[in-house]
Image 1 (cartoon, rainbow, N blue to C red):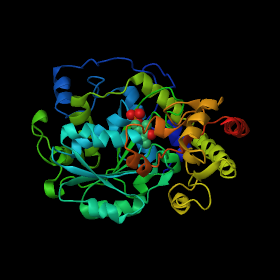
Image 2: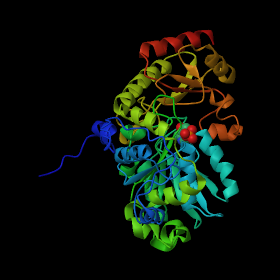
Image 3: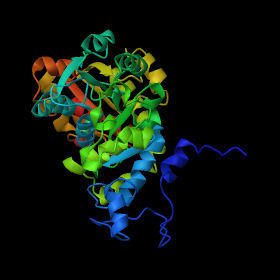
Image 4: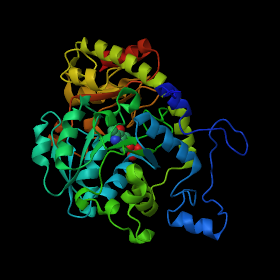
Length: 427
Ligand SMILES: *Cc1c(COP(=O)(O)O)cnc(C)c1O
């Protein structure tokens, strides 16, 4: 008898969850507790030395968070996940397992503005050096790799510019360099794109955005694809060398194809402490149950709005890979065939001032620094999220002075368009 592989919508509702064994509760309970009672002294000892799986303390793991971890790992097609406090925490904890002071990683320069800041500034204090590459010139990734390179980092659909990265091409470069490819899949979610299918070794998420989907919780996730050989060449000592803090265990030897997720938990999360609240995990799990329905509606609304804007006489250009003729349209058809996401940018003929006026005149849209809400959101990156960057960095990141970013919500598309119409008329 062959066992059925559940479809995506079924996994979005069921993966990782079962009725609570003691109460029968059907929804995943919020285990709002800091700590868990040991059976006895031997049980405690085996938990602390990683000889048994189990709950110790919510900074390291929690049963509500565990359901979320299993669910996102299943949706991405990975071996295991680790839920953390935010998308940015997922990035730091991932790099902490890969890089030592003086090491480098290569990153696409078309990234979420917060990631550009984190890589350029915060990582300096850890001695982790970013080398930027251009996703529109894949060979720049090859040129950026050096003997010190420990990882390559890209976004599948990049925030804010509507850039689609050629994941397979970058994965080939990572494989040749012998380093893992990390893909931030926040804007696509696994409903639109599964980076592991194209060679990603690690997927990171801001659950804060479309996975949670309701603008009510910050959270992050690291998914281990189980594909990378951490022991080859001994370049990743956190995984391939005996760990003094766990009686000399070698994580890759002991945990095989989910060793990276374990390393992030027992070496990064345990010591850096960016733990996710179980309450947030509960809200995000509830959001994920409707992920396929929401993402499809987000994409359908977004295509309608992008088409409408591209015909408006105050609009200079629209950058949405879902539009035929967009420079990323072919990549979108390959990597995100169900839709190119709900975040995109457009340029106003009136430049910076027109951008500021537009965000002041909208009513249905909320002017704020987030994406991936049920509500439609608008921001003028040059005066907000990308303010800290230099002019050149802003343009490189797709956030020049005339650029407006939209995150299209789940309202009726005619209402969304009507709001933009009145705001553009008065701008
Ligand atoms: C928001 C975001 C992040 C950071 O997530 P937080 O939960 O805000 O820390 C990282 N990457 C992308 C693409 C994002 O949109």
